[in-house]
Length: 248
Image (cartoon, rainbow, N blue to C red; front, side, top):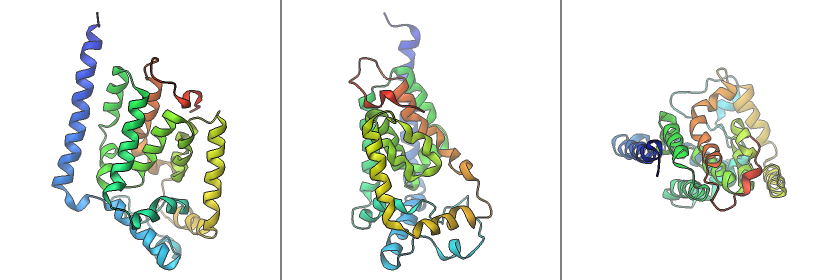
C-alpha cells in the first residue's frame, strides 16, 4: 500500500507544474511585447551576420560598454551559435519554441522521474527566470533541451557548450566514446568562424564594464538542474539511459 507521502507527492507536483504552465500562458497573453524579445535579438544578429559578416553590435566592439542586465539588447553567445540561429532566418518562428520544448519533454519522459523527483522539478520551475526564458525565447531554452537530451542519451549534452557559462552541464555522458565524438564535431563546428571568436572575446569579456562572469547565468541554474534531478531520480525500471555514466 502506498505511503501517505507517495499519495500526496504526485498531485502536488502536478498542481505546481500546472501552475507554472498557467503562469507562462498568462504571460504570453498579458505581456505580448515581451514574447520573443531574446529570439528577435538573436535572429537579428544572424541576419546581420548573413548580410555583413558581423555578429555583434558596433558598440560592443568599439570599446567599454555596459551590458543591459534588465532588458537584453546585446548578443552575447559565441559565434558557434550561428549553426542554430541561421536556419531560423528561414524557418517559422513557432519552431524555435516547439522543438526545444518537445525535446525536453521527450527526454524527461524517457528518464521517467519518480514522483519525488517530479516534485523537485516542479519547484525548480518556480523561480521567474525558469519560466520567463520560454517567454523571451532566448537560446537558453535550447541549452536546457540539450542538457535534457544529454541526461537521457549522453552525447547531446556537448551542445550545452553553446553557452560556455553553463559548461558543467555538458558533462553528461563524458565517460562514453560517443560524447567525445560529439565534442570533436562541436570543435569542428567552431572552426569556420575564425576572427569572430576574437570579436566574441572583445564583446563579452574585454569591453563590458559590468560583466558578472559566471554570475550572469545564475538565474538559469534552477531550470538547468531539472535534467540532473530527472536523471538522479529516475525509476530504476526505466529503459536503459545512456547518460548513466555521467559525471557532474
